Length: 196
Image (tube, rainbow, N blue to C red; front, side, top):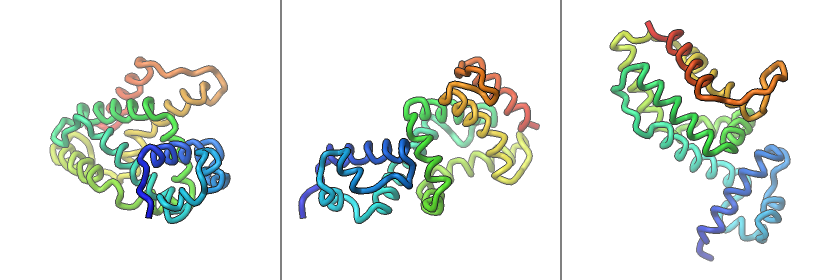
């Protein structure tokens, strides 16, 4: 068996993400990926069992990188506002530095890969966030609530602003560009909505 060429592995990963972002999962194939990478299809099968294996492995690697980026300099013992601010900083930085990954994850979230996408790949991240939530609820900083409610209030505004920024316009078609002022004003409103 031939050894994996790490440069080739990175190229395959990068091009696979680009193809999925640009063409969607329906338009993605191993043949198309091989063509774009200028390698043989047989070479892809040295690295991955099949299309599903490739997508799942890339997703696992990228989720790990994203999880590590989100918890950078984060401590589950932080106050609610301080911890949420660090989360917003880290998430926003990750999205700005990896603009295609947000779209890649959105593609997966609305596909048959959702089950794999949402499975235990981010166990460390989930444990850290769970501890943070336990601490802030225990200290009485926020009320206990279903995770979906918390996430919708705490992070959906950030991701919507990023989407408007990436599209270059707001819902009514007016031009939109993210600024620190808009980002942190929105954050202040989120904290106000969640804090006791």
